[in-house]
Length: 148
Image (tube, rainbow, N blue to C red):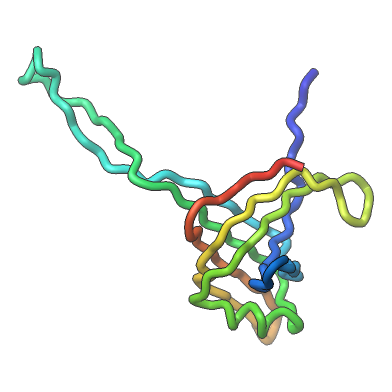
């Protein structure tokens, strides 16, 4: 029997822009991370030259690729200031994907890296309830997948 190796959790990290080596810090509390890899396309409808009266068939043409990342979870006072300062800025991001293995850190399965536009940081802090945070990111160029 062959079973898939599943991603059990993800950690999102923001780069500090340092040179020559950049340091990445965990976005503390963001425990649910979604990655959406997509291709944009346009539709063209092409008629069969031998049957011009027949309804044409769609041909999809890829026009671009994108990666959107959304990370949700808890609010964190220590990272709030640095994350809100990134709104509207491009930042190097790493999303590390892990498998639970019973240790404190888990097993790193791979990393998606990309320069991304930080679109939004949404905070909800209800008086009667628990606070939560959401950060949304949009790719700014190519991404890489590095298997561990």
